[in-house]
Image (cartoon, rainbow, N blue to C red):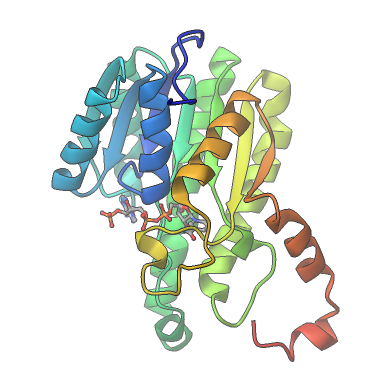
Length: 254
Ligand SMILES: NC(=O)c1ccc[n+]([C@@H]2O[C@H](COP(=O)([O-])OP(=O)(O)OC[C@H]3O[C@@H](n4cnc5c(N)ncnc54)[C@H](OP(=O)(O)O)[C@@H]3O)[C@@H](O)[C@H]2O)c1
């Protein structure tokens, strides 16, 4: 039995940015089974068409798409206006695009680091600035954004990616503080390692299952939560990691 499908849910208009991401795709499969309307944005037209076709079959009441490289921030206002016009409104925006990047290369080459920071931080800031103002005008809406536990403390193995997510989490915290009183919800999602294409080059044996992560995200969005560590175990783990004194932390191989 599919426990995610429900006939009692109010249909939602959902905009998904980075819709071909493994986590976004798994989340959209649940929303499609619940009969919601989806506008999907991704940069790879073939992958995007395949995802859209699958979600139509799974029961989404409406699916439309746009191909866009989200690094191109100049295009964001027109892209977002087009998506909201197509959906005839927007209840939820789900930001999922991102790159892990090459940490070793970023240590040697600023342009590599700048690319990671642009995709994971500057592009979401551009999207969220427009989307937050849209939601504030209507006094409604949820902005759900994939940050990462990696943003909770810089580590030598991935501090460029981690700092992009730290910036994003800080931005989301401030944005929530600004728009909560306007009836707008901001959810910061902090996954630990998840089995997707992003982590395919690593040992995925102990990583979280993407469908379980997606189930938890769907529930947190419906419950209008502020922050989500997923799986939950990462909340106490990151609390401990954040509190390790710097004189010890700098000696660790994390
Ligand atoms: N997997 C994890 O362990 C993990 C943990 C914590 C946080 N996260 C975060 O969760 C989000 C989703 O990651 P995932 O695991 O689902 O990884 P994924 O499957 O590799 O998805 C990343 C997506 O981002 C898209 N993307 C990258 N740059 C883009 C751009 N400039 N314009 C448009 N799309 C772009 C990629 O498109 P293409 O397919 O065209 O490359 C891909 O669809 C990311 O923000 C990631 O940082 C992941």
